[in-house]
Image (cartoon, rainbow, N blue to C red; front, side):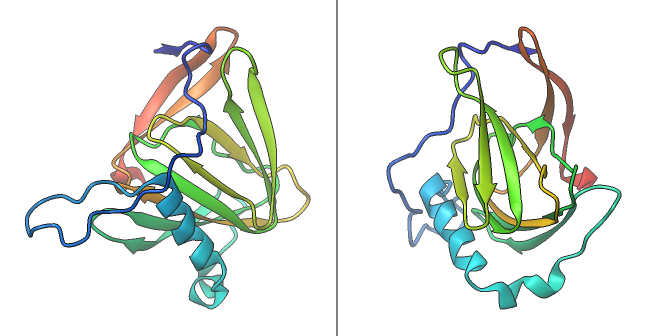
Amino acid sequence: MSIDLATTPTATTPAAGSRVAGSPVGTARPPLSPNALRRIVRDLAERPERWLHRVRLSAEDRWYERLELAEDYEVWLISWLPGQSTGFHDHGGSRGAFTVALGELEELALAGPEHGLTVRRLSSGSERAFGPQYLHDVRNTAQGPAVTLHAYSPPLSGMSHYELRAGGLVKTSTEGPEQW
């Protein structure tokens, strides 16, 4: 599958939203908005006593652990050593947000035909929120480790990986929760 640069979705700053409180038992809650997810990761980042002791570093690949799982969202803790990256990927239709709690990362995203590839430097305290069609590559190009907190709604059910080629992004693989 090839994704045309002209139609590749970009990060947006959506209007504030929230989940529906008091949903009847047995009905699925609607997904949280990207801004609601941003608040979740920001609030958690401001309370390192809840997650800092869990951080591990792995020379093999990024280390990650799910911290929270609710009906309508989940939160992940990820550590990054220099040189580690995600490669281009989607979030299986989930909305998301992440914050850099410690260190510094770089995010690559396609910003449409007028802007091409966008590279953002994300220092400690930086936040990103995105909709369900967002594709990006996050990497540690700094000299030291980094730690991030990520929230997704609904919880991730799969992710596809892509290669950036001259004509756009080409899907190379898909993975599910059993591989995490």
